[in-house]
Image 1: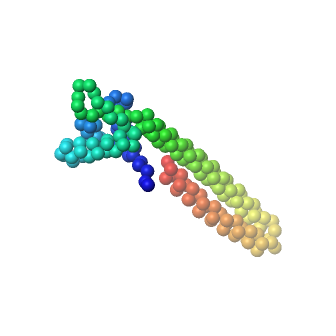
Image 2 (image 1 turned 180 degrees about the vertical axis):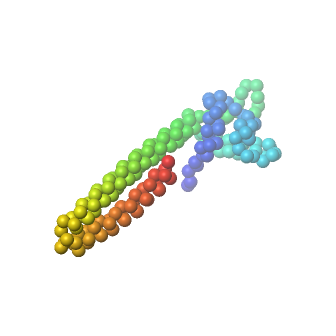
Image 3 (image 1 turned 120 degrees about the vertical axis):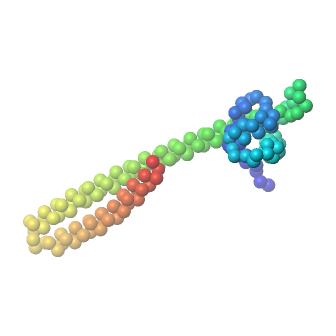
Length: 169
């Protein structure tokens, strides 16, 4: 058996009435202002009436009758307000996780940049050693090549982290 999951945007629209009761034509007017709707308002009214009945059936709205009207009025229930609050809380948690992820990417980027600076200083020191120890030039060149190859990997990682950081900004 499938579980009904309401449209959050529609529930948010209904929540604008607060705890006050409303009729479908009032909801239709707000809905029409917020969305692109067909020009025939009766089509929209029928669509919304069906959605409202579904929300009543699932206890997101309660049906009430005003004393001076035979037509049903609807009022949001606590279940609807709880669902909207949970949705807002989950959105803020996602933003919090995104902020932590962004900080970890930035931290990793700084670490990679630091490694590049250190390895460039190491290459510079090895180049100076070649002048001091000319008979060890082959060994020093091999060490320089290994550091340079490692730098290529680090530079690729930095490039990827910078792209990720740019997308998150």
